[in-house]
Image (cartoon, rainbow, N blue to C red):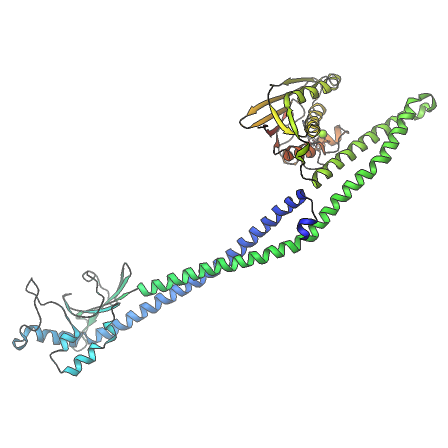
Length: 465
Ligand SMILES: Nc1ncnc2c1ncn2[C@@H]1O[C@H](COP(=O)(O)OP(=O)(O)O)[C@@H](O)[C@H]1O
Ligand SMILES: [Mg+2]
């Protein structure tokens, strides 16, 4: 695959992270869109189905209230007339117990009984109850009843109640045939189980969740291909850019070396140089030294970008020895600029790494500390052991860094305005290199600073096992 062969491992890792992030957000967006859509569908369906159920209950209630007057009449005959004595059984309290419609109609001819027996209300998930005006249950039909008595306050348009997954609607019935149409004749309560509806909605819910996950998963699979294709040119041009930087720096090295060698030769024979040209020669020498430093830095960065850390060249490094050597190396420079350079080192703090790269890392920090600390200031290098890590601190009492600039100091070619205007030396690559080296050693580098007071640079590296 182009992805794997075109790139060196380090850039591969960088683009891998980018691709994974893109994929993750792509999946999240698709899932969010589908999730919202499915939730809306579910809510609409649930609302609709509940409405249907309520409409059905209302309809049954309306037709049942129409029969209340007749049922009441029949029931009264059965319970009061002597010829039907014993037809309606009585409960332990001596009161007649509720009977079914078929029992009520049983006193008539057989065909009426069979007609009612096939009533759809016989379904086990529904029930209708007819109450008299004193809310005493007379007749009931169907297979589902609430054990509770009627609600205390029943408005004219009826009242809904829900207990568990049983939904009921109670409606008063008014006398149509009497002189007083407001007189309550009795009540009808219709009950229906919402169990089937809930099972249906439960199924719908899971189908939608499963659908959203499946479609999002498929979209993510498509996304893998899509991000791969769309990142391909970016990866290629990034790789070409790195190759170009690396080649250009490499090619610039030889002519620069030639220029510097020629200048050195000229400077070693001052008698051959016209006195008016001495200063110009010094400027050229300084500029070419800066340029070759810049080219070296660029080349180092380009190489580190292209290649994964080669741990075969790593060895155990005692940090106190490495730092002591560097402090010795920088002592003269510190004295020249009248900065007190101190070290607080402890022995036995060892890390695994590339000695020259770690040297470069701390040199960059020390160069900065000395460069950005005015005379009379102090620079302290210290090393500590913290858990499984070594912590090297390079601390100075220099010009400091403004809080809003602190996040940028590790960016390539970034220099604070103050540094740019006052200290010509420097390219803004020192800290970028230091950070890259620290990260290649599975460590990190952070900074704390106060403008005008000084800075702390912390390098954290894993201790050698
Ligand atoms: N010890 C320090 N004190 C104050 N400012 C610092 C210090 N170290 C770095 N900086 C700021 O961070 C910028 C980037 O540092 P660096 O990458 O080493 O580049 P430069 O080549 O400018 O030294 C510097 O230009 C400077 O503004
Ligand atoms: Mg620097």
